[in-house]
Length: 366
Ligand SMILES: *Cc1c(COP(=O)(O)O)cnc(C)c1O
Image (cartoon, rainbow, N blue to C red; front, side, top):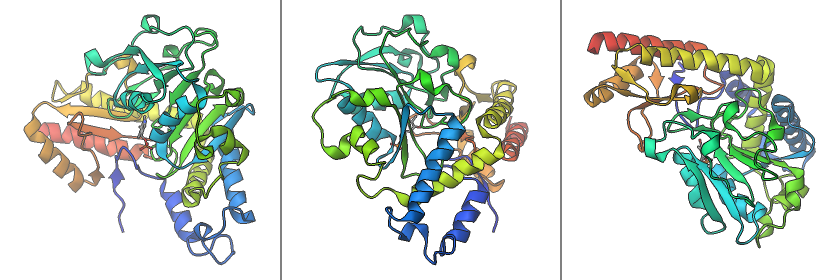
């Protein structure tokens, strides 16, 4: 067996040690004689797995006690639709800052439920920047302000200075889609009302979604909705209103334990700074052979989209990369070109191998 370096944007590479542990425990979890995925979610074994995952994630991200943490199915897109149902009154405005494809998706999901105001958008420049905080047209009584922390397709990432300061937007809470950058650097959770993320980029396997909610927001009436769409009920039911995605929860728990053991978010911040710099240096030093036109101040540390100077080279690039054990580099169909996703589980050696390959490819085809 040989494992390649997998640059997939999501589902994405998992730490090899996590996969090995899951493999070892597949048939017999901790001497029970059955797989964790075969046991009741209400039994002591899974309750242990579930509560350890929550405790570990709280530790990893320094999540304060006045925040609830949910582990649900449905993906980030379902959260996007549920935000206004749970936190906006009928007819209330919600502000959206749109900095790429996923911000647009968020906007699309809420249209039936809320009067969405696009407070700022970088669409005019092809989503290569983040509009300056001073230019945001925020509404006075908005239910919340929504941002996408990292735009997975366009490769644009908020830095700390782009978020509204507390008090800056009055009592309006900041909601953020962290699907592709959660737990990749230290974050002051208390700046946010809601943080959410599908797990399949930076936190584990697809099929489970983390929603972190400041508890006072759960007192908002929101809009008429079924119990299963109600975050208050999910918090009361400890994410087990119905059968949770237990296998995915288990794998997420193993991944979070691995991140803690590797040194936590401070260590992953250092690694992702080094990893992303390796690729941007090759791109910027290629004399135009490779191109990334995102404003350098907001280039993503997680997803590095780039174009070759001649589209005819795309196919040979992908084919030769695959031959070198570097897979899933094809860009999103919305943008074309290439994209290297380098989340926490991508080792530095993988990124170094890609950087070397890119230099070599340029030499042979430049
Ligand atoms: C992948 C992604 C989504 C969509 O997530 P699903 O879990 O597939 O619904 C939303 N937002 C961002 C930033 C993403 O990267």
